[in-house]
Amino acid sequence: MLHALPALLHLASPQLPVGGFSYSQGLEAAIDCGWVKDAGSAEAWIGAHFDAGMACWELPTLALMHRAALAADTRALRALNEDFIASRDTAELRAETQQMGWSLIALLAGWTRAAPVLQALAPAFGGLNGPRPVHPVSFPCAFAVAGAALDAPTDGLLSAYAFAWVENQVAAAIKAVPLGQAAGQGILLGAHERIATAVAQALQMPAEDRHTTTPQVSILSARHETQYSRLFRS
Image 1 (tube, rainbow, N blue to C red):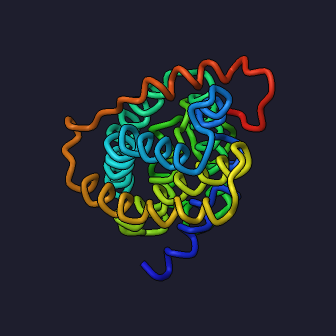
Image 2: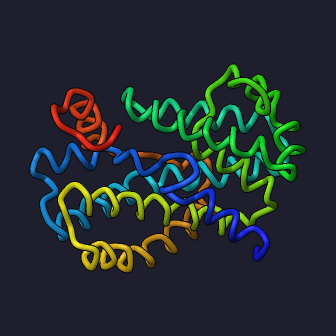
Image 3: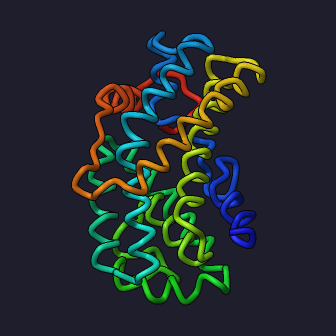
């Protein structure tokens, strides 16, 4: 884990390397509607979004993707990737996961240690180390491939992914509500136990039990496409 930790933190960062900072996943639209207006409502929104989407869908799907990538099971990985993209039910959310996924794959193509994994998994997507692959690659799928290339433990991979998501939501709230840095840090501190619990559950969750129920996010994401003034791309 120690050798993989710096690389995981690098890849998971919402600031670099794949541009997660430019997306809010509906939070900016929630602010525009007045649903999120202070630290308390921001923490409630982020927590509810995490529980309804990240904890019971993204994290268990990422765990399955990582196991498939480690086993070079191209059929399973492609099916999971297609499932995840299908769950992104607005144009902005689909564009987000595909842009970040391809950006991460392009970054991995420059890592010598990632070459064997990319070569083994290339048939699932119609190429991974040249021009843009035939089949879109979602961000969690690309992150799973990165984890396999790093030989990272699944629990560490999920923890880094989940914390980066919460951190990015908090950063978006600090900019757009706006919130102070102390309020943002308070939300992050409060998320530690939630993340640890969600990771533990995701590692044990059967594939058929995965689900996501985020209709408010979907509605707000669709509204965001025509929002007059915005800082973020989703």
